[in-house]
Image 1 (cartoon, rainbow, N blue to C red):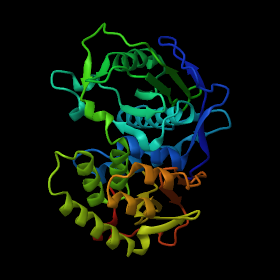
Image 2 (image 1 turned 180 degrees about the vertical axis):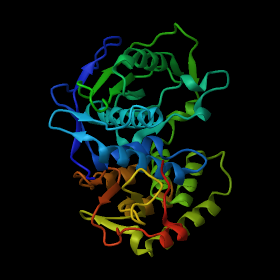
Image 3 (image 1 turned 90 degrees about the horizontal axis):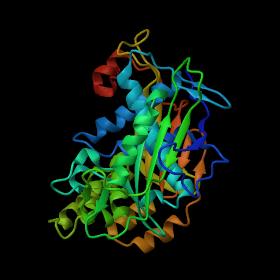
Length: 382
């Protein structure tokens, strides 16, 4: 099994919504393996009662699907059994979300550190939480909404579009007069033996109240950068930092901020002392964690063991130090402007200071034995 290249997807206007002015359809939208994983973790891996399980789950499902898939110069096909509907749905949704975010960053002026996930707690009492869009993001022109869909069934595209359009059309923010952009994307990821290639359909429907509106709390407009870094800290394994940033973003409702700050500082210094938790990308030093993912989709080891991929996830040390000093968006923005992005198949350094390395040749990436499995290194996947 081998990880290959990048997924390239042509962009089309929605046949139901309108075209998005400013989207460059002359170029395919593309994501390589490392950036795709990082985008999926930003969108999917930062929530839930057990975030570590969720992060490992999305790493494993996505990597295993990509390892078995077909990559070509003009198309991409997932190689997933027809019977495995759950896995197809999860992968299609994840990839669809990653490409939707990427399109907004590439063409619509969204900054990756200003894209905030809309959670059920952001929805006002009396509105249906399931009707909320996925994200709110800030551009130079104001705040915008984004809903991302994904499917492996081409015949479902129209249904998915209609649902996505409804979600961005009927959503309003309490106390905020005008939402500057309402966008949706619907990504089609073909499976093996499908003659059609992948496709992302995008549109920006006009607001409309043909259904009961969904109202978001005006709090979604505040501290998007802090919430972003709270999510990224969670992803790279800095749980105390994540909690401190989330509580700082909720201030003045939060209490005992000094205690949470001290816990975050102690965690940061402890993590810096662990060799596996530190790595460099370009001229930046990152701190985070290493996660090992099995290169197989079966619980039983082959010949007593299983080869693993080594995944390093990290966040820029300088930015972490600034975050621990308290809210100072302008200073962090200045530091972000100094970062030179790295964009390679298995290595990504984002403009926000987050990074990922996928390593098949790690010296620790040996076959795991039953004894190591018993010591807790085994990650189950089915």
